[in-house]
Image 1 (cartoon, rainbow, N blue to C red):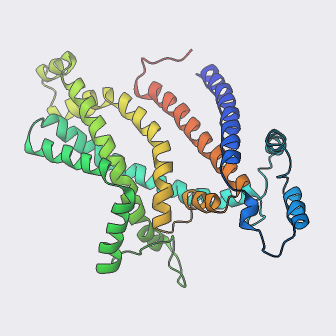
Image 2 (image 1 turned 135 degrees about the horizontal axis):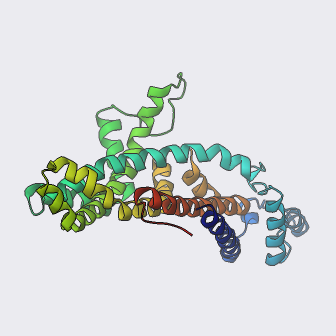
Image 3 (image 1 turned 135 degrees about the vertical axis):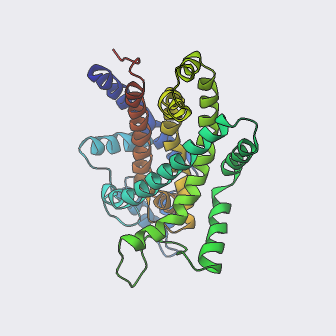
Length: 316
């Protein structure tokens, strides 16, 4: 296992290198420039050239990339072109809220999906099965911005039960309960989409396992149905479920960008939108690098969990 992890980390470094090259090229091919956001009508051409040279934007793209990569290898992700603060410091302030939101939505999706998926599979073609499958389809197809605005309208504006945005209530002593109240709506928005996807995979995986001979043998030996489902069937159905959970990390990052903007959640997603709108190239590069690291780490963790779920899987 250790040798396998070392090899995967080596491959991950190569992938990250390729991601940085592609990201840097795409960012610099996009129309516009960071200078467009700071141009003053009274600036002369000489002032504009001096500002461009100060930001290093007068150099060829490949020279800019090499300079950025050298700084990265020394632990420096550069400085924001809008706030002039270190990019690593800005991302460090935003990553914990995003991880909190993603973790809550992922846990919520799993808690909802596994029981509903098992129920749908064991009651195939019943009314409960149709309800579960229809609900999962709605969860997958419903846009996050529409669901988010609907929940804000119902629970924040009409009922007044939950706050409409932010992480804390301004002007009050923010505590654990206050943080949970602010987390509920954005976590539900992401969790509904996640649960809708998971239900379909749990159901299909369980249906395949329930037809296996060893489950008929277990029932013939007198094992109660609850143990047949939870101990024998579910564990063997976890492989595809673990796979889709690992792949969902990238989807949650994309969904969090919209959800954080709707609920004014101060995380990576909101920072991404702000950086794109202000053409803050160093911050965008740092965010792309962080997203690539999170996806690669999730894939590696998924492979490791495989061997825990199914001891027959060995890495050499």
